[in-house]
Amino acid sequence: MMKRLLFSVLIFSSFQSYGQDNTLPIKKFQYLNSAQFELGGGGGAYSFNYEHIILNKLKFKTAAQFGISHLIYESNFSPVLRIEATEIMSFNKHHIEVGLGVTSYYLKPSTGTVGNWYTDIVPRAGYRYQKPNGRFLFRIGFTPFIDTKESSNQFQSWGGLSFGYTF
Image 1 (cartoon, one colour):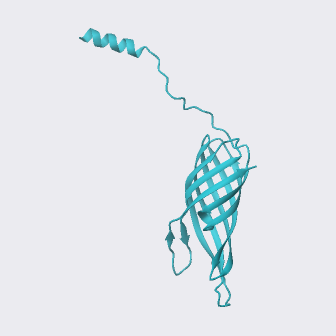
Image 2 (cartoon, one colour):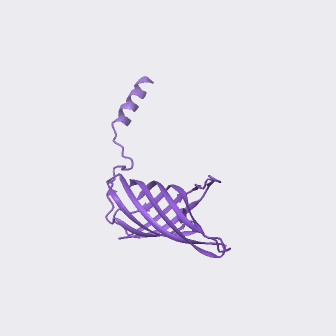
Image 3 (tube, helix red, strand yellow):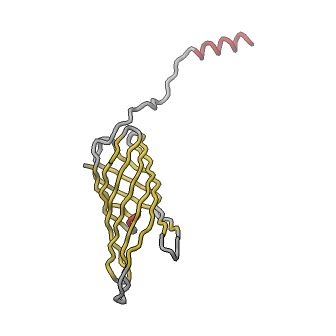
């Protein structure tokens, strides 16, 4: 019995086995600029965004983003401006994003009084699909709003879905 066990261990331990190759080379982004349309996210209902990759390392990338949008408040057009800094952790064409943004918007009541600018803090945690040399990008993320008005300091859960083109 012991001889059979020892013989089996020696036979099976001498075979080489191969698993999936997890050593695919991680590459830098070839295109450092992108134009994106985001549903939800830091701009509210939607936003148009421009993003630039500031640091383009193999595993980690840092991006800065600027966006514009608008909202209708008491039948008035209210501009929305946003900026965001994002750290991107790369796994070839799949990426994890963590960022922090600021969204400012102007609200003017319809009664004719002077409006005010308000600012919300908008963190981001999400997933990004972008090939290192590809032109298309897709992002989905959790983007809650943290209201900075003195009277509220509320946390509102929110999310966003982006489609973009890199150049």
